[in-house]
Image (cartoon, rainbow over all chains, first blue to last red; front, side, top):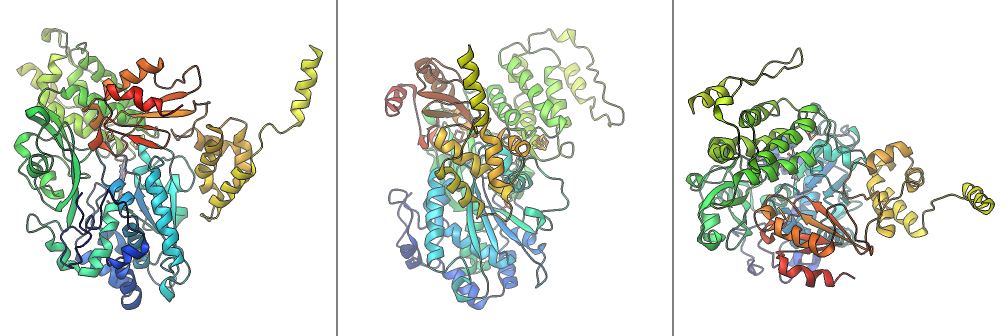
Length: 461
Length: 171
Ligand SMILES: Cc1cc2nc3c(=O)[nH]c(=O)nc-3n(C[C@H](O)[C@H](O)[C@H](O)COP(=O)(O)O)c2cc1C
Ligand code: SF4
Ligand code: FES
């Protein structure tokens, strides 16, 4: 990433990464402050009431960058305020483990003070007394740099007792994990932070009401939070215009490309930049002049899209309308000579291994899915296997499992079958005439969610 | 025969696992971060693992006592998380990313080369106790696939031809 450290211009277009120079490493407190760091926190503590900070974030229309795009201002507005609200927590989701996602690492390793200031601001906005950064254990460099930044900030009175001489006190800690993707699911994260097994919790109650140790808690992603100092400093209107009119979603986005591209990487660009620009301009196109076959818009748990979708603006609503999700916004590209069945098998192996095991459809359905996919990949699939996979996408779909892990796992599978059914069919050995109606007996009381669509398609073919 | 028995009886009287001062200090430091001792479970397990490479069974009741929860509770935590090792590991732990972007950029070849050079498969440790080989979720460095971590160091992109030189740096 090029050096942008001279850009003191308040109209800067890449707020999150403008101070990042990966060759030089992160700025220390003094240099960070010289570039305007912590001035948003100073301004908030001196001039703004916590509710004013909340209002600005809401007005900026900041949407969560952890994958779901939930409006941050609305999330915050559910937190109880006032003198009787008691102990509250702000938690940063820094568990980044969504396959294909590599943006939070950059922000934490290269701009740790930005996140520390953001945590303080978010903590102030909801009047939390304590913040935790829940960091995946493998991010050792990020842990070291964040801890150093926190120590510097504490020594300078930017954290700790009576922040900047005001009434509000705030402690911030880095908590490092010990593996397991499910820790990124926000209620599983809370359990993990409490020192329990990372099984998700039932919602409601939502964490804003009863989260960490039963207290009101906000969980936000690293990138979401990192925007907050800039919103406060430059205002909601500036933030909304960062998209350069490409979309209705506000701000910039850390986009990226991985897979067999010429120059894979992660770049901060206006929200609504197209995937074509990401792939062709920033990532220099596909490696070896190969054609693009399919792409995941934002991580393992998003539906595949096709080359024909490349010109859509990458924002939450547009990508959803195309039948997928923007997710984390870092795209993974599959080349024309790479197997979709192998790719999906790899994805489902990941989800099967990372299932927390709490609910049956996910715990048992994912290994079953993997078994079928391995057979098809090896050319040993049986008649009815594709139909069985399609059923899985419904049995493990939204509303049928305790958390969004299994439905997420089904997204790439269902879209792969939709777009590349022929690649699955090649892996089936049995004669098509042997098709027997697939009868599945469901336990009493469960609605039969199988439909005749699969058999109908099969008869037609 | 009889001397064997004497040794065993003596063993019964001595606590089988003792936290070192350093470990105890690290656990006590972690406890200051949370209003509830249980929350230090993972920090405490990691503190012991940092010094011993893994967390033996007889460490569990001792660590549990240090943070004030039951051994059964801590055992539940210790068996949930993939990066808490419950069996001895080699001097160096190699974690190979097996997620999608690395799958598309040479994971199979990297894994194959590691298995060939080390003569072990995932979950195993080399006979000389030098390396343990494990798979891991996306390391958040997908633009550098295929990736792996050895101990705390990230490597990527790694091609099969690079493997021997990289391994040479971990004796
Ligand atoms: C299985 C699963 C894994 C998740 N992993 C992460 C993660 O690693 N990082 C993250 O920020 N959000 C992750 N999320 C989303 C979080 O549950 C939550 O929506 C997010 O932290 C909210 O932050 P935001 O509103 O700032 O986006 C995951 C969700 C699920 C269902
Ligand atoms: S869907 Fe999977 S990960 Fe989520 S609670 Fe159920 S078993 Fe656990
Ligand atoms: S998929 Fe290997 S580092 Fe992300």
